[in-house]
Image (tube, rainbow, N blue to C red; front, side):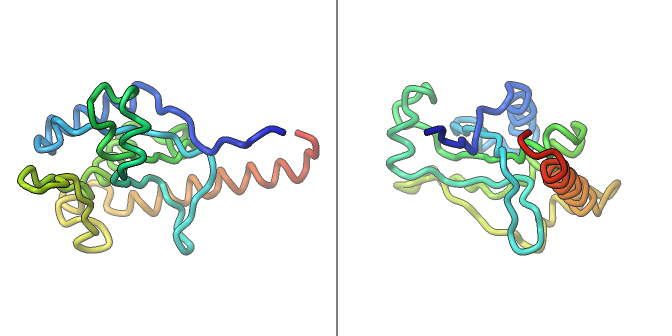
Length: 163
């Protein structure tokens, strides 16, 4: 029996973009361990396609990722990026998505569990709105592009059975 795997490791370039963003905008994340995975399947929240998301790890995930993370406590967060988005956008949009996901993090080093998540301050984050004045509807543009790619893939599979 073949099991369909939903995720794969992100390319090193995704980590490079994330490290640059952390150095520029998120210095408090400098010591965080963040795993990036590419999501190979379409994910939606309501009618909107999910281009990226970030989760806080739990005790089990931390334990299972100790060796890979290079730390004694495993990864602190896991960021998921839609692979279709990654393969069909440029660096400007990739940066917007990674930066947006990093905005969801909150580190309180005085807490027993210092790694938290925070919701949007508005549909986006106020600071992201300011950083995206050159393309304020980027999320809609990229969402439509990725949804169209997924739809095209579904249609081509329907027309070409067995592929």
